[in-house]
Length: 220
Image 1: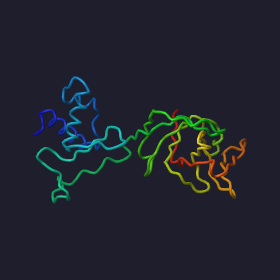
Image 2: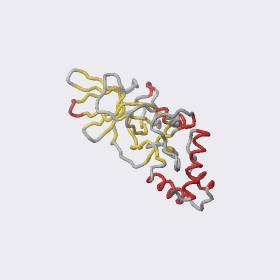
Image 3: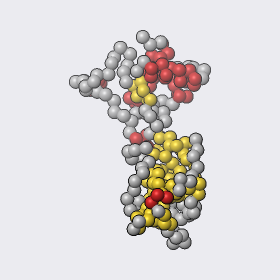
Image 4: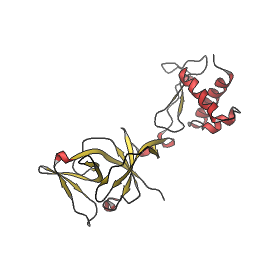
């Protein structure tokens, strides 16, 4: 059995998802249930989650999924009636992913790789499969690839790269840079996209690929 407030909340979330495909905000839930603070909403959400009535979708802001309604389990197979068909997941275009923001990365001379605790909200539609993080671009050596100082590079984590891909390269485990990746004989060459800069050459053991550029975010 659910408490009255738990029952009211899951019905409110279910109605909003059916109407819009997007979960209500915590502020909207607080007002709908006439609660004094959002902490009450958090407690109700946690209780419903523990009892497997709802679940939070990972890395998505305001994303909840109703698993079952009180006294009405969700069928494992699609039922004959349309009303019993499982609800599709909200479209990625409506979702926002909170990516870890790991400081600034040089698009010029390598600078120290900075690990931070901040996050950057990014539309999920900009990302593909895999684990991602964000870096703020510093410098102008990639301007001819359309990557400007102050942009946010959206990076998919990987330790391998093919020639011609733009990668985050960690040099001697201390400095990170954003460059085109190329193999040149027994060396690794990191190419800028600015005629004012020269390519950088390193031995393979000096360079570790930390990810490949998956997208770019620019604020005006």
